[in-house]
Image 1 (cartoon, rainbow, N blue to C red):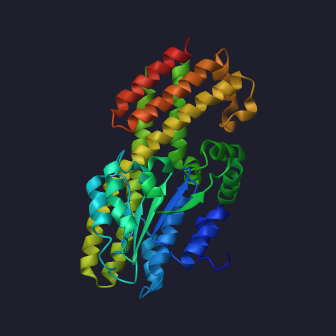
Image 2: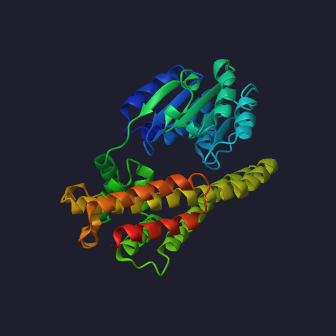
Length: 380
């Protein structure tokens, strides 16, 4: 395994089985792969690193090809990376950027790579249309489907891909990584972030950053206000505002990355590339902001649900199961006199709201309704 490229080694640090599979794949690449595993298991990072290695092999300047492929968003002309703009991939985008583009020869180098993130969100029409590309691929085309719910893919799609499985990271592994990266942070907060992340290292990192701490605080405000029966200050608006700020932060990060690449193109005298990257920076930033806001809101609601499940654990006398280990005093106060069954029912209501937000209902109305339903359930 020592011959595996550094970026791919780093992306699969906690995934020995996936690392072995990808090392073999680099030696003899297949035309289609399906990266599966729970959210945050590292499959997306591994897909980007794997795509970079595929594009670097045979390129006129391998290091430049890898560097551009690793950028997110990537300016590499032979890397198409699709993310769903909402609850589902657009049929036309899958058709235009993958199915119709795959037969055309690479712009540079010897390969083209097409990555479909959250592939399980493709409509059946898109999946059926993709079958011909999977069955009769061009020799230079490589497809990578990334999915947290592969059961939502058609059997005909799955059977035509070589599966690379990623295991969920355990809270101990995440805590170890966080401790290394945040040596000055409160150990209790680090442990709580690792437990609340649900196996997602990226989410755990967010919870230790300024915006993540804000999301935690506003989520706890909402849960505790419902428990106390004090909703006069509309605490759901605080959570929405925190998600909005997180979305803006994500958008700014994407724009900054593309602007830096545009500056490189300008310095190299490539005016056309610079103009294209400036335009992409604006559009990609908007898309990233929307997506970042949606993901932050879902994370916030997940934290509300975690608080309620912890209340149930406290009520059942199972404090060792509490995820928010750095808030035991507050949890104990909220759990006093509360039937654990009501807390568990509240967590179910939160999960139902998260599902409803995936089908584009009004976010503010959905959160307001959730707050009052939780108040009725918990403040009695």
